[in-house]
Length: 138
Figure 1 (tube, rainbow, N blue to C red):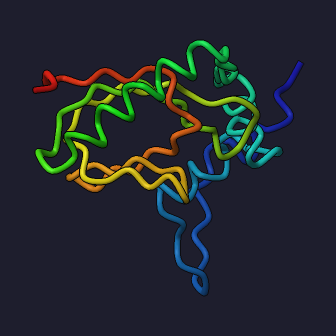
Figure 2 (cartoon, one colour):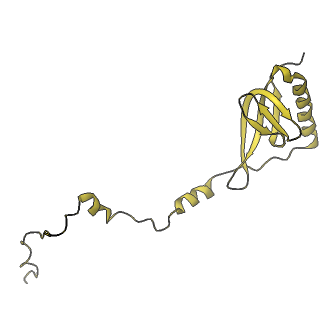
Figure 3 (cartoon, rainbow, N blue to C red):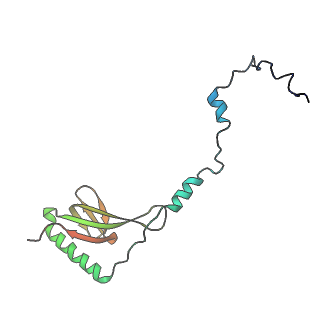
């Protein structure tokens, strides 16, 4: 049995006189994997990302938070330090996350229902689930 490619096996490699030779990087790129579903991995990651449901406070707990707010109002001129745990809604899906911060209160706006800190943080009063004053009332 004879090899059918014997006549061309030892011929020199053809180089085109009119077209430039392709670089090794461009040649390798022809064989790289193809992402047929662009954005599919990001969608899977987003679906897998966990969020927490917002806790609904009881009336008793709301009354306790209201008492702490009243204490803070009386001490507002001293910019009292507080520890706050609050809910931040997720922008892309249902639920959100609970964050904890410590800072000095600058203002409490009951009309817009926002707690303002001296460092610029603004927390909606309806999202606060824990509020602890760090200074004693005199």
